[in-house]
Amino acid sequence: MKIMVVGGGGREHAIIKKLKENKEITEIFALPGNGGMAKDATLVNIGAKDISAIVDFAKNNNIDYAVVAPDDPLVLGCVDALNEIGIDCFGPNKAAAIIEGSKVFSKNLMKKYNIPTAEYEVFSDLDAALKYLDTAPIPTVIKADGLALGKGVIIAETREDAKEAVRSMMEDKIFGESGSNVVIEEFLTGPEVSVLSFTDGKTVVPMVSSMDHKRALDGDKGLNTGGMGTIAPNPYYTEAVAKECMEKIFIPTINAMNAENRTFKGCLYFGLMLTPKGPKVIEYNCRFGDPETQVVLPLLESDLLTIMKATTNGTLSDCDVKFKDGAAACVVMASLGYPQKYDSGFDLIIDKSVEDSVYVAGAKLVDGSLKTAGGRVLGVTATAGSLGDAINAAYGKVNFVEFENAYYRKDIGKKAMEVK
Image (tube, rainbow, N blue to C red):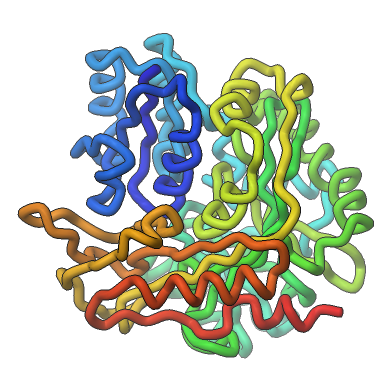
């Protein structure tokens, strides 16, 4: 069986490594993948947004099943295009992927179907947005409507910061057309939880909860990043909270998408805030999160391809989805200076003893040698019976990875360990 995975980051590496456990799979192609995946998949130099080239490759290489992992190709309709030539996919079609592709759509969906979220207003006119900010509660959250590489959200602590954020999005177009419309949102407080879920549009199966660490520096200081590390499960996500989320958020979201004729199949990511007034949705993603995937999939006991096919075929209720007891921790190793200016092209040395635990996000092969090629270079993951042991094991494995200008946080999981 030939599988094609669209995407090229650490999330895709984690997906590929999990898929490899299925013995029916004879070959996995990564489009475009990265040099660090070369031992696990055949790299194909086709960009994740080049839909026509992806379709041609799938047709010419008799691909049996495709996993479309990143947000951009999903929102662009990659699944629809592959379905048209008879190839089944894991991932939502274009109509359903809008739940991440447009924050205005997702916020309006939640309001219409009474799904708990922050209060908000939507603006397409700069002057109207600035006028609203004269009296809006501060701090506030400014969000670009469209995709912005995970960077289209600004928390403004002052009224002037809020206005500057709106100007930068709507006037200066720092996120391109994604900032033509903005959402100005109530600032929520409480622990954040990420819950990825498998769904076939009828059944929802939440995966193990996780906790991301977005800030670049120890102590949750510094700039927001794509994620500097994760742990799973998230200790704030108790059985009682999980039950409430299933009843008030997860099932209502799937039902709402069905009611809008946008049936969602694939992985629906719920970014939650556990506020004093109960769990609320901060954001939806239409795919596996990165780096949450790097701690969730290592805890999955069931066969990933079987589950993925069940989401496609509408048979998820018949599928046994099991996760291991215990915990996982992932430490992201980045290039010094990320998420701003950083240097790349350094030798990347991963000791054989930890290769199975490393998910490469930013690397390329140059004359057979692995070189760094990105801000987030890789994630080092460990699983263990307890969270403390998983964290210690992950940091132990970090010592077996080397590259110049390597930087990583030293406190991944510290906050989770303090939860009583």
